[in-house]
Image (cartoon, rainbow, N blue to C red; front, top):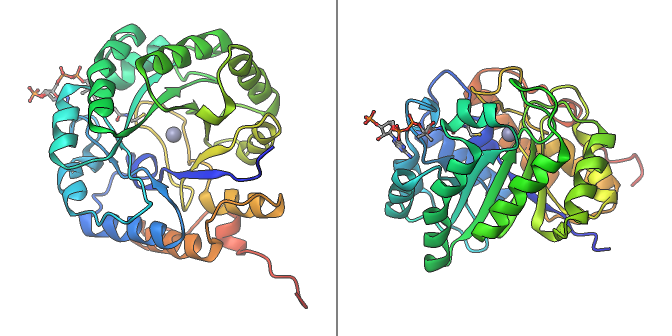
Length: 302
Ligand code: COA
Ligand code: ZN
């Protein structure tokens, strides 16, 4: 089995979207630049959503227009509907992500649609992506538990993932939006997806470390052949429509684990820590991630 892992950075989007104090576009652009310096090649940059829903990302148009494009770096943006599609296209994006969930109540709270309506709203977005040659991804949030509905069965996750693939997305990211899963849940859901005929190479896992299980969940998914993980440098994150959601799995913690597992990923831990320090200064609070506090490890004599 391949030992190369893709690290899909969500810090500038998922990480910052729930921050109350305004962050300047300059600071966000510097953060994205530092992430690229660290070797990250997929950096989710922002969302073209309603500025009332997510005020922190209301500068998406300006940010994407000013963002320096680097060869080999992809900057996906979230697009929920045709209005978002127009804005994203005008800003010159090259990768888009659509987002729905495995539970009806979260989908209603988050994007004011039923799951079926959301799939219909995404159809023109993914059609445009195909016309323009953009890369595309679909999110299935609340795949392990919903803040409103409680337990979520794996059949619901498989059903929504299938609909997203039928639309034609390149990849589907399965999200533990509120951070309730443990490794047994990961095995249950990923096994159901694989048994449904979905290729592990077209799946990503999106863990939040709300209850400290994110890295254990990564190892469970690695064992099942998953090779793409979403993470946020500095461990920031949360969704205003997911009460109780805390930080994403931190990129620095993921990089350290993958290094110890002997997996290649192309990301430099010191570079990630530099980007984490930047965002920690911008947010005005200390890093709470494990590796952010302890640093990496260079054994004496090595
Ligand atoms: N970008 C900017 N404005 C948008 C927009 C977009 N993509 N989509 C809708 N709007 C505006 C409309 O123009 C309208 O503005 P008006 O009141 O000035 O006329 C207003 O938002 C309401 O539009 P409507 O189509 O009725 O949307 P809604 O109120 O049902 O909200 C979403 C639907 C999807 C736009 C909204 O729920 C949303 O943006 N959610 C994103 C949540 C999110 O990002 N969560 C975190 C990621 S998991
Ligand atoms: Zn998330």
